[in-house]
Length: 295
Image (spheres, one colour):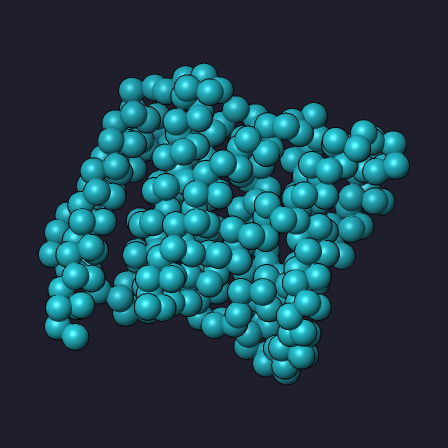
C-alpha cells in the first residue's frame, strides 16, 4: 500500500512540475534570480506554517543534532537552488525545449546513480532502454556540437538532489524546511540589498503581481513535498523514470503554445529517449507485477 501511495505522490509531483511554465510566463518581466529568491523566501514561510500546524519543530531540533544529515541537506539545498534558477531562466528566455530535454535525460542519470550508489539493478530490457537513451544524447552532441548547458545542469542537479535526499532519509517537510533555512539568508540579502528590480518593493506592486510572487511558496513547496514523500518509498530508478510526465508537458507547451523551434537533431534525440522511457517503464511494470505474484 505504501508503494502505491508513493507512486501517486510521484505522479502528482511531476504533473504539477509540468504546468510550472504557465506560472513563470506570467512574470517574465522579473529577473530569474529575483524570482528564485522569492521562491526560497515564501517557501520558507509556507513550510514554517505547515510545521507549526503539525507541531513538528521538535524534528528540526533533532535534525540539528545529526551532522551527517545537516551536511547532506546543505548540499541538496544548493542543488535545488541551482535547478530552480536554471529552469526559471530557461522558461523565461524561450529555452523550454532545452529544459524539457534536461528532464528527459534526468531519469538516465538517476538510474546510473541508483546503480552505482544504491546498488539497484536493471533487469531484462531495461539495459536496452539505457543504451537507447545514451545514443539519443550522443546524437545531440555529434549533430549540434554539444549538449545544451540548460539540459545538462537540470539533469545532473535534480538527479543528485534525488540521490542525496534519499540518503538523508528525513521527512519531506523537515528536509525541505532545513534546505530553505540554508538558502534564506542568501535570498534575503540579494533580494532586498542587491537587486535593483522595482518589483522588490511589494508596497509598490499591483495586488495581482504580489499574489503571484507570494504564491511561489505554495507552487514550489507542494510538488517538492510530494516528490520527497515518494523518493523515500520507491526505488530511485522507478522514481526517475516517472519524470517523463513533466518534460512531456513542457515539450508540448514549448512547441504548440510558445512556438519554439524544434530542429531535426533534437527531435531525433527526443525520439530515442522516448522509446527508452517506454521500454523501461514496461519492464518496471512487469517487474512490479511479478513481485506481487510472488508475495
